[in-house]
Amino acid sequence: MFNLIRAELYRFKNSGGYLFFMILASLLGLLTVFSTGFDTKFEFTIMLSNVTQLSYNMVLLVCGTLLTVFIGVSYNNRMSYYEIMGGNPPHKIILAKTLSMGFISALIMYIPTAVLLLASYINSGKQTIENPAMVFIILFIITLHTTISFILYAMLGRNLVLASFVPYIRLGILDLIVYMLVFQEFSEHADNKLLYITTNSQMAHLLTKTGDNKLLFIVLISSAIECAVLYILVYFVYKNKKFK
Image (tube, rainbow, N blue to C red; front, side, top):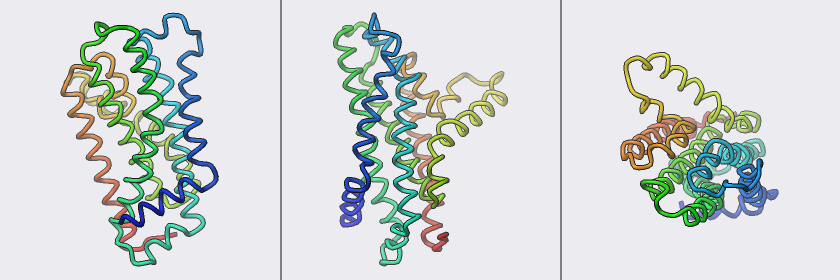
């Protein structure tokens, strides 16, 4: 599997500037935080609110699209099929892609935002929020979960066109449907913690529930469940060679 990971990293680094454009998109996405000016925006609570409600969603969409297009292209040019034809077990192929590109992509999106939030927190002082460490931990888990799910969805689609729409389906339509179903079904019978299962809701709760360990638990469980289901589906596709 180590050779597969090395191959993925080499391909990602040397294929059409995807890596460069992801880094650029991640940095430019932060500029939306200051789109209305710099006054008082460096207060940590305001910065965190602006990041989670606007900037980070844009970063996830743009970088996620670049990531899934890269995967989609590998199916269109049959590169991904050669991996299975070479006798590599399906689980090694899946893990190689998610562990390499998933982790690197998550870092590309996360580090600039984390540095900005950290600078804002230092500037604002420690009294501004109850548990700042939880913010950084949960945000990274959300980011890693999102990138891995992007990769698995793109591998499941095995098509450039479908892969191009994965981030919008995953962050937009899926979150909206889940939110509406949960709200309609449980709004009168349960508290809002049920809504933590969507990415946007998880980020929205970072500001108000930073000291709530239940948020961390739900983020971890929801991430594990989605990725596990997707892994099984992709494994079935590779194991049975259901290629297009």
